[in-house]
Length: 507
Image 1 (cartoon, rainbow, N blue to C red):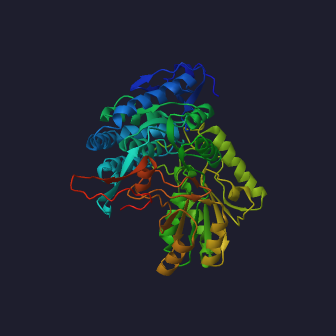
Image 2 (image 1 turned 45 degrees about the vertical axis):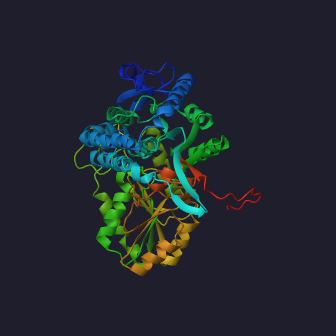
Image 3 (image 1 turned 60 degrees about the horizontal axis):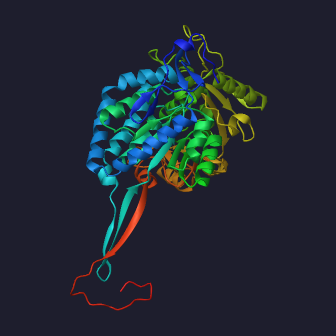
């Protein structure tokens, strides 16, 4: 844990949100929020005490008593206001995000915007939370369902999308009538907190949204607490598996979106220029720190001859601080992350992969202390190599050769992860074969990062996801509600009695 330095001591402190008030933590454990392009300490984030975590959950439990009874239209109108406030403050939100996370300003705006789309979806809750009714399922008997909120729910979010992923979680949970405890990433919580401020401004009542900060202790407290009914998580496979096992063992619902190793297949008939642009953007954008990034490309047949052109395309990308105009690739999140990426590149060389483009130690004028690594490309990559088996979370692309589409599909399906995949082709027949046979949750056809818009649900699979229901779209309404089924019959004085019924049949 970072001990406060003389510089850090002057940095502002990130607050907790408990009962509608931003409060200073009484903790003795703090972490610095560091600009990855400059190493400037931007703020200090507290690791909340057990008492503070208890207070946040208790606040949510108390607020639930009234919030669950709030009219569905009143809940919807809060999110109509919220989306307006996010739009009005887009530039400010992007600037905060870039400072603490590193991604370029246009990409930061994209981060906020993809979360904004979920907020807009939450405003449609009146249509999304409808039950069903069947009339006369038996003589004079009707059956209908109610989709009722669970209680206090919680979200644990990662550093790579500090705006989008919190907005995946608390708006839909709150719109369905729950209250929420959010634990943002301790590495870059500042943009999340600004979004929380705007949520309160939009009209979310005290206690309905609460925020705590911390590490392992906070995560375990969320998993264990009897008053938390559901947990949503996005992050690494190691932590996600821990959260899922611990939360479900404690009787909670859990959805965990975890690690990935996304593959794309390139067929020789693909539009070359469009495909190379798509690969470069998806592999190296956000410095490769997206769970839906494209770190593996399978080149089929004649497409293997495109490697020099792909390298040339990657060499045109500009490495610089995210605030600088024209930047394509910003820094990775921390010094530790930089060391890990550089170490894996060395491992790739040692394991026998061919280094086509070395992005280590780029010269970035004015930002010499930044955590920079440029686009890096390996060919002749095989399973068993560290650069293939591990999620690198850096701008490193592994190229794999295949003879035909069948071999490529089989190769992808043998990988344990199933977050996203893509196919580049001009053949409708090949595209249909791919979407039918590939065992991956999200499939792109000439789309490199196939994250669905909120009308649909995020659908990662296999080792990339634990839990049945995705984090937004229609599925999340089911996740954050309990289906109550009511079967009813009414009698009046003229109803003919059927006497005592000792069977289970409705008569």
